[in-house]
Length: 246
Image (tube, rainbow, N blue to C red; front, side):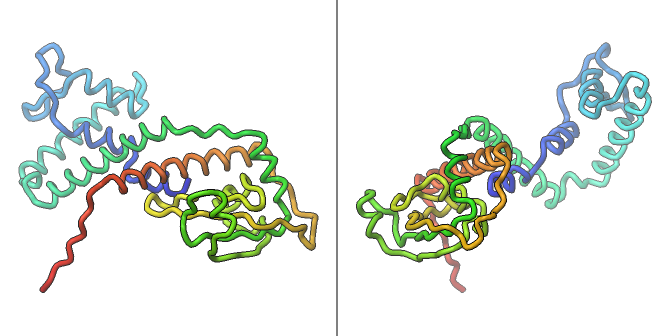
C-alpha cells in the first residue's frame, strides 16, 4: 500500500497525543489538581491519561510525575522566552493541524475500504506465475470492451514474475482481450489490456504462498480504492495554478 501508507505516515497517533498534551485544557478544581508547577496546575485525569498512554504502572508513579514536571518546566521556560509568539512556532502549529486533519480523514477512509480477496483472484495469479505475458497500456481509457480490443498503446512482453507488484495484481484478474483501469498515486489513471499468455522457457518458477498472496491482493485493493477516491476528489475540485510573472 505504498501510496496509502506514505500519506498515513505524515504523522503518527503518538505524535498527535503528545502535542495535544501540551495544549491547555479546562482549569481543574482544587480536588482535581495532582501537581502544581509555579502556580500552573496539572489535573489528575491528565496525569492518568499520560500514564496510560506511556504505559506507566503504579510503582512508576514518581517517574511519571518527574516527566510531567520536567515537561511543564520546559513549556514555561519556552513561554518565558516568547517562543510561542514566533512565526516559526505558528507555522509548526499550522502544519501539525493540517497533518492531523489528513491523518484522521485517511484513517476513517481506510476503515471503510473493502479488501476481500476471492479464491479466483489467487488462482488467476498462480496461473500466470512463470508465464510470459503480453499486455498494452492503452493510449486512452476505452468507452467499451469493444473499443479496448482494438485500442492502441504501448505494448510490453515480459515474464509475469518480473513485473512490478501492482501490474501483477492487475493482470491476474484479466483474461486475454480484457482490460482494467489502474489508479496511480491519486492523480492518474490508465487502462491496461492483457493481450497474450505464453509458457515460459523455464516452467520451474516458484509458487507463492496463498496466504501471502491474499495479503498482497488486500493491500493492492486498498491502495487502488484510496487512489480512486483521491482522483475523484481532484476531479470534483476547482483547481487553479497561478503562474507568477516578474
